[in-house]
Image (cartoon, rainbow, N blue to C red; front, side, top):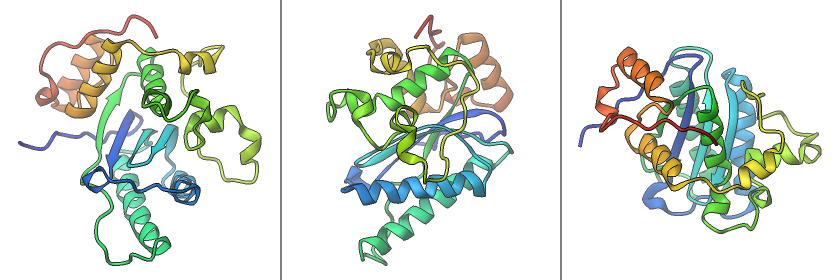
Length: 226
């Protein structure tokens, strides 16, 4: 199967996913998660990357990123995954043991409206969706936890940038509210195919502008509300 075409245009917003080799765990203890969060802290400054959301799971991670320059997403991700691989092996005394990740990261462009909120909710609900916590904010290694408990990170470098759109007034209730099966399926289709995630008119415009026709199986459904 040919590789999914990826675009890397500055000022667009992207969901990014990468999984560990063979989907085996790479985050075992708090120190492992903190190692990756430190990389995000440093990478945000090094690459002037806007990090809008993230969630670290035992064998994969989700990021929502907005690079400022063309090619910025790839540069950030190459550095982050290589740095994480090197530091992970050093921390676990497995230097020389090979790749940590299964391959290239997956990404898709997100429309800057309620579709962005839908993706961020999808990312931050991940631990709740797979039943490893009772409430989404109970998972410490995500942007939601940092949003809800900022005082715990006063001595840390900043990871998160402000969202470019207004957040719901009761953001915590918004994240904990289950998403529809239709919405989850639409996001997962974009994850797997790289299809831009937004309303039909916007998605068609992005697909034509960046030559993403291969990501389209059928005309996407517009999300009416989140």
